[in-house]
Amino acid sequence: MVETRKIWGNAVNIIGTGLSGLVGSRVTKLLTPEFQFENLSLETGIDITQKDVVMEKIASSDASWIFHFAARTDLDASEKERDLGEASNTWRVNVGGTRNIVEAAQKFKKRVLYLSTDFVFDGNTGPYTEESTPSPMSWYATTKYEGEKLVARLGESGLILRIAFPYGSAPSVRPDFVQRIKDQLAAGETVVAVTDQRITPTYIDDIVGVIHALVKSVASGIYHAVGSQALSPFEAAILIADTLHLDKSTIAPTSWALYYKNRAPRPLRAVLQTLKIESLGLSMIPFHEGVRFLV
Image 1: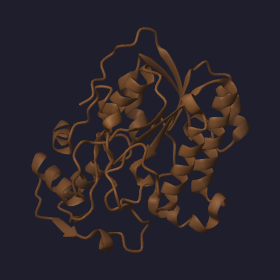
Image 2 (image 1 turned 180 degrees about the vertical axis):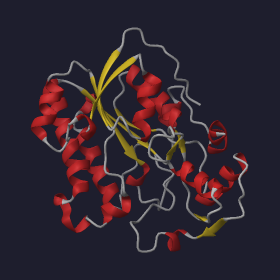
Image 3 (image 1 turned 45 degrees about the vertical axis):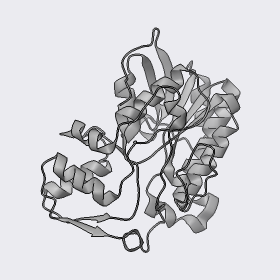
C-alpha cells in the first residue's frame, strides 16, 4: 500500500477537474493541506467544453499543476453516441474538454496530470506496459486515448496515469463497483459476475499515493497505477462476500461474451504492469487486502 503521509513543506496549489468524483474526492481529502485545490466543474460554474471559460480560469490561477480527472465514463451511454463522432457528448467532454485544458496549460505554463484507463487496451494480449500501443474498443476508451495523445503533446509538462476499477470511495460519492456488489449482496439480490475476464481492481488510496509521489518528483510521461492482483469479477465478488461476511450464494457466474452482449465492448484481459512505479519504490496492494479496509 502506498504511503500518503504529509511530506510537503509549503502547500502546492492545484487547479483541477473532476475533483468531486470517485478518485478526485479522495485525492482532495488525503492531500489537503499539503495541496490546496480549486475545482473546475459544473458544480462550480465551469464547463470545460467552453474554451474561453477554461482559459480565463486557468489564466487567473497560480497553480503549478492542473489535475484533469473529469470525463464522461458511462460506457454503454457513450457507445450509443459513436455514430455522432466528434459531435457526441462523450467526445466533447473527453476530447474537447481535454484539448481546452492542454491548450490552457501550454499558454500559461502549467503541468497536467491526466487520469486515464486500462480500457485503452483491447485485452487481447498483455500484460501491458506503458510502452504498449493502445487499441481501444469502445467509444469511451477511444475518446480517453485521444485525450492521452493531447496530453502527450505537452512533453515534459504532461503526466498520464492509467488506473483500473478504482474502489474505496467515500459513501457520499457515486458508488464504486465494490460498493454496488456489497449493496446487492446485503439486499439478497443476485449478483451476476463474469468468470473469464481479468481485471485489476485498484484501491483509491494507493492511487492517491502514486499521484503524491509523481507530482512531488515532477514526473512526466505515462505511468500505470493498478492493483497488484489480477482476478475475475466473479472471484472479486466472492472475495467481497467472504471479507464482508455476506451471503455469496446469490453470486451467479456468467461468461464475458454473454454478460456484455449488445453492450459497449470491454477488454477481456486488460492487465497492466506497474514496473515504472515500482522502480520509484511504490507498490499497490492486492484486492484481497484492499477489501479488508472496507470492513
